[in-house]
Amino acid sequence: MEEVLFEDYNIKFTEQDLKNVDKNTLKKCKKRLQDTLSKLINK
Amino acid sequence: MTNELLEKVEELCQRIDSYTEKEISVKNQVKTDTYVTRIKKLISMIENAENDPNIPKVNNEEEANRTIHILKEDKYNPYSKDFYYRERLDKLDGNIDKLIEELKAEDEVGYRNAYIIKEIERNIDIANGNIKNKVSLWEKLKSIFK
Image 1 (cartoon, rainbow over the protein chains, first blue to last red):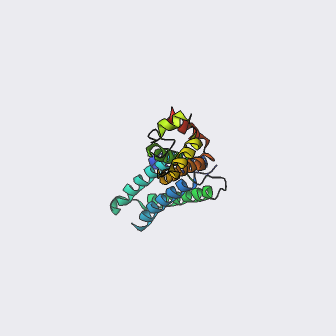
Image 2: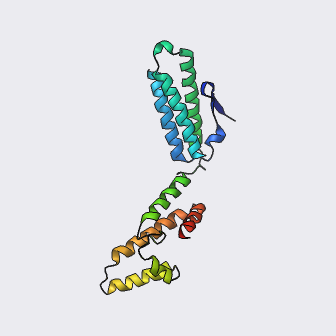
Image 3: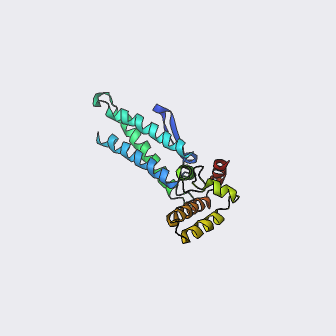
């Protein structure tokens, strides 16, 4: 099963976390992450 | 599970945003690159989940709560405790169709119930539309009537 771990913050995401989550919520999560990524890349 | 995911993503993003805001001198390029890689991977996982044809379109819990909130406050809503015709409906043993018939009959003799009837029917449609896919909503609505 795919997973991604952010050890510094002890936060892990697995495929199970994303299972059965509605489309709108997934979209919100993606947007939030893209915003953070954009700031990270551009700073 | 839906709110948990949102909260977890928000927590992660807030922490990384705080890191991003730090002075360059205290940041570590290796760490930054690691965060970039992992966020991209997480986004990719989310995109895979989005492409699953079986996922629900809306958060059923949020939609149910939103509908209940609307239903509870409307005086022309037969499912609301504030329903204007609550007593009349009770006398008709909760038969909404019968109440609507009575209101229509009154309207014909000049009572101007057309708007009220339309609102009542609209609220019934909203409730029926949501109930098709959300069995749990019926259970919550029943608890309002008690």
